[in-house]
Amino acid sequence: MSPTANNTAPKVSKAHAEILHGLTAKQKHISPKHFYDERGSRLFDQICQLPEYYLTRTELQLMDSYFDEVASLVGPRAAIIEFGAGSNIKIRKLLDHLLEPAAYVPVDISGDYLLKQAAALALDYPNVHVQAVFADFTHPFELPQHPVMPERNLVFFPGSTIGNFPPAQAQDLLEVMRLEARPGGALLIGADLRKDPALLHAAYNDSQGVTAEFNLNVLRRLNTELNGNFDLANFSHQAIYDETHGRIEMRLISRKSQTVSLAGQEISFEAGEFITTEYSYKYSLDGFSALARSAGWEPERIWVDDDRLFSMHYLTVPGSI
Ligand code: AVJ
Image (cartoon, rainbow, N blue to C red; front, side, top):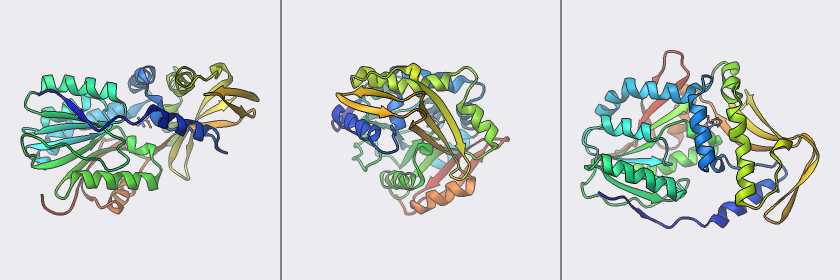
């Protein structure tokens, strides 16, 4: 089955307008979704290998231990809808465990990676109907039809990417997921857990400086793609854990007073002023279940590693298929 795509890719200029808007706001900010150009994705892969960055490793362990159980909960002939075309290894693990998966639908705004990943999967899983959808998954989108009628939709959102969204937005996103899963559908989602702040701090301030490179890379990207002249040496990486909000906040701090030009606009920084580049919310098990309930999900099962670092949740949409 060859992968096809529907919907049209949103215009690049929309992302650019959004970035300029964020950098001219009182508190400067850039969405973490802009981290992932080719270099950024490679740096993120390196982060996942770091000794301090426990998230990926722990989630993969949970998958190896519990995907048999997930498969029996999901049942045969499911359509998997992945929000964001993420890690190849995770979706392959899932497909390898599920019973006769009917379809795989990766949904993302960036076309290249999405199509490449979909094409590779279609080759390796000839019985799975692979169809990429170009869409901003924070808004409802139309699902493709499949040759084999799936018995249920399973939304897949690993990696604790949900942590990038502040609670109100996370609730909205979980509602979109519920709409796409439809009554009788399910959600398999990873959520990073609250823990000793020292462990969190280390995970986002690694000793090799890869996270700093990853953070600064967004400025490099603005230079090439938005005709900017950021001098990366004039900004420094910071990641702090804010216990009140239960979130890591990543920042790029201006080392001095400076003016940068970007897409023909001047952007001024005071010394010490910063751009917020990412929130990474951490949850308690109850906190995450309550959030999901508020979006109409029924929590069914939670898996956690022995060190209680990371959680994987299985939830369903009330009603029948
Ligand atoms: C991909 C959003 C889960 O929040 O830990 C890693 C991204 N940022 N190191 C996270 C990230 C800095 C990551 N997520």
